[in-house]
Image (cartoon, rainbow, N blue to C red; front, side, top):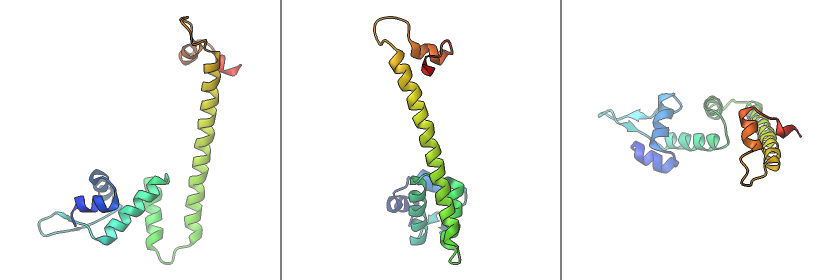
Length: 134
């Protein structure tokens, strides 16, 4: 099948598929005329990558997960370790976002939000005042 058909079946944009090919995540066969020729196995890999990326795994993680998936002698502990590391990344990002939210909420509380020109939010962004610590 051509890249358009593979894109439809995998629910990935053709541009993403070309990128995955460029970095060696997928390697479709070639027809005599030089066009890519994707088969069911390639589409399955693309779907695997779409799901893994959707769960936030990096390209390098996806490369590792694909190699583990294709290795019938793999240890599930290796897969679990990758997933646990991803959970730790998510937890750290959530903590960072919560901290950002707390800081911004404090700034919003300090702002009068009226017709006055003074604004603690802008002052804080400019580094002129520290209203978020209060």
